[in-house]
Image (cartoon, rainbow, N blue to C red; front, side):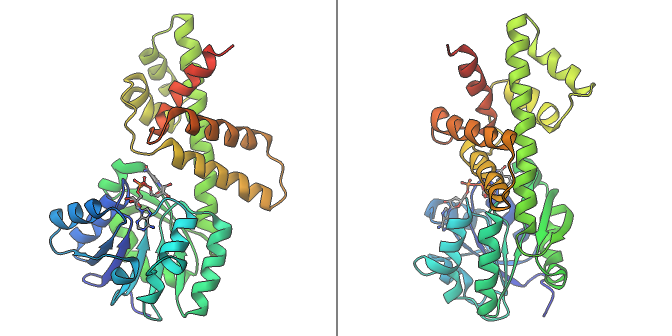
Length: 302
Ligand code: NAD
């Protein structure tokens, strides 16, 4: 098992809001990238900006000759399609011994199954979802939550080190994905609480900017108040770069984990329903910080 150091070849699938800056960090560190995305524009934009990267037309083609594969895709179903079951999946191009890293926020139960399926083909899987958003993907300071074998993490450490500052081994396969979904439950809960507080405060006559400043110097402080309050919510730019649809998916994942373990979590169940309805009502592509608009809509409903 060789450690993945530049110029090792990595297949990178999924060049979206997060995948693009993460792959950029790898290219700039000297890794050889073979990239694929169903959006041809995403691929040509990336290769245009990083001429050393190789554009490919399928997951299988990206995987050919690669020592490792990274997926940064919307959800576990799409990851499974790209890696194992879709048209020209990566598995048909990978060689035994290759390391697969799913950095998407996937469902941990599906990840456990994927790890078993890949092991039958002689391949190890690390789940390695990230937290920190687009800004920290760009500057390489993501928090990376790893599930899998410690030896595989050591193999992958130089790869993760280009993208993240905090790399935590959380447990066996699926542990990273479970922790990521639970993290986003906390993140979403803090954001909704801030938005509801702002709606009530504004109606009372408080200035929203002042409210956020006071939260940030008081016990109400959270990632929502510090990072999203003034920048994306009070300004109404709603441009954090993470969609309501993906946040709703993460909450459903957290809810599914609780249900799988037969645990009753009323607050989590309510959050799942809240974000799923918000996703339907805010429209396709809405940023997750637009949950403020949803809170405003609900406040005015009879
Ligand atoms: P995105 O929608 O911007 O990017 C996903 C990319 O995958 C798109 O370019 C899309 O064309 C591509 N794609 C979809 N299906 C494909 C397939 N079958 N084969 C190849 N490419 C395919 O999403 P994102 O915001 O980059 O998020 C990616 C993952 O990271 C999600 O699981 C998300 O929950 C998670 N995440 C996002 C953020 C964020 O701030 N945006 C932060 C942490 C984690």
